[in-house]
Image (cartoon, rainbow, N blue to C red; front, side, top):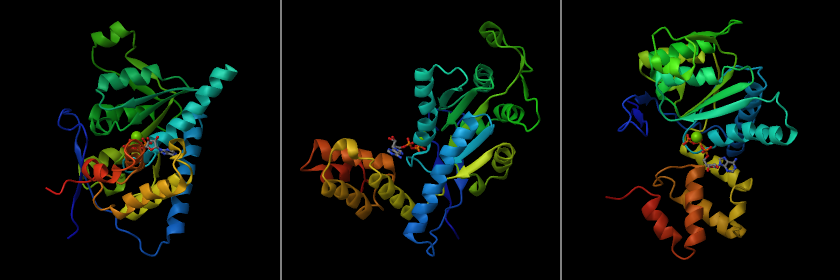
Length: 291
Ligand SMILES: Nc1ncnc2c1ncn2[C@@H]1O[C@H](COP(=O)(O)OP(=O)(O)OP(=O)(O)O)[C@@H](O)[C@H]1O
Ligand SMILES: [Mg+2]
């Protein structure tokens, strides 16, 4: 029987609102060549850019991006959104959208206020690794209203709240903005029926983009692709030094604490600061301990 894979949300121990997700493992498709996998990933990341632009342009009201840690989800979205920021700064173009990236846990009332602040047609809220809001009934109901496909999307706060009154937030408002959800959860593989029901309600109102980087092989190919694209250029390594970093991760791929672009940067930092013993240090700090 396939083994259950549990993704424990990072803050679970300190954040009671967070939960764990049981998801089915994804197996390698041995019929797909490396070149095909790289092409598939490139195309998905291009779609990530295009969809982020579409939300920014107000043509798409919501998108969910799913992929494992450290593969470039936040980087992709932020790069597209911040480009417009720089442009707005230079061109003083007030027609461009404003956005905020929200990370970590959030209470329903905090979410209500956030959506109010970004209710404008030109605004976007990015929920980056904010999975607790996907599990909370109140939050989910707010998203259902905020992202519904009707022409008018009204959100209500049906309880008396001094906090909202003090903050000048009304008990009902129309949300015209866009939302982007960035998450490590692969929706269709979630096993809990209750949780699946929750996620399906959201998915039905959003475009869902799975970056399809699930297996060790796919993660390693993504690393090679982005390093080849110049990810380590700022380190000014010689080509053989850069290759040594990628080879080190590849050879030890089963032992690395995480197989990600973030890990490449960690190993590159070590190689830069400790050119003679970076491997020994990386074995201790970047690999799972033997005992
Ligand atoms: N295309 C890229 N070129 C250069 N660096 C990149 C690229 N994509 C990602 N990175 C770098 O890799 C690291 C991890 O990327 P990012 O934070 O976007 O991952 P993530 O998928 O959002 O991970 P998590 O789920 O843990 O939040 C970051 O330091 C980022 O700057
Ligand atoms: Mg991220």
